[in-house]
Image 1 (tube, rainbow, N blue to C red):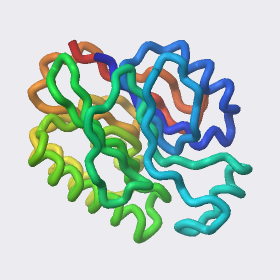
Image 2: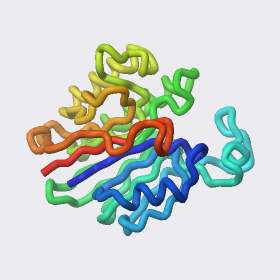
Image 3: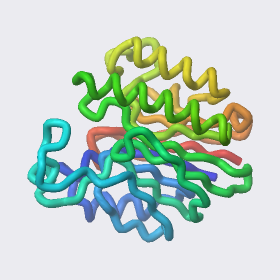
Image 4: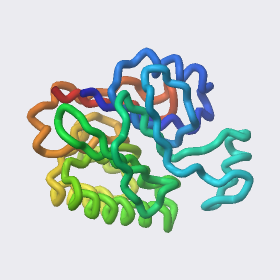
Length: 229
């Protein structure tokens, strides 16, 4: 099973056709896009959206319709080769999405999100951290086989704290992962703030945890993936 994530920065700087062309050349079972628009990715028969950011009005300080020249904005989209069997409620359905899938490893929940939609700007980063914390604790009680995937705006390397919102956010996330028996499969990728957090029981099954696209090629973020066999 191969899972990837990338913040495509709304395809603001790189045309969506180029992003589609590149992503259609990859072979993932799940692809989680953040700061996303609706892309046509032929490898995935299923795609699931967070609630759309409202059009033609100011939402959290920004008119996304003007900012994106009329494109519809979704903070997260899950592309999948298999259908979802269940959807979980989340506190902020415009920022997060939680779906269950039946896989060879059992029933797994993918919780996709952004923490720091406006990076350090208050109160958004603090609220999004609290929402993630509360959502994941509640969902884990129902199904502990939880993946937390997306743009966390956090490097977990001690030498790269300047890539993070603040130390409190970093430590809060590390505590959440530990409390829910999760491990960060992408924590050792340098200069990376987008992560794939997986259940601890799958840690021994990781065969790869790498970058699949460098920053500056498709967006201002790295794209990362993990392979679990």
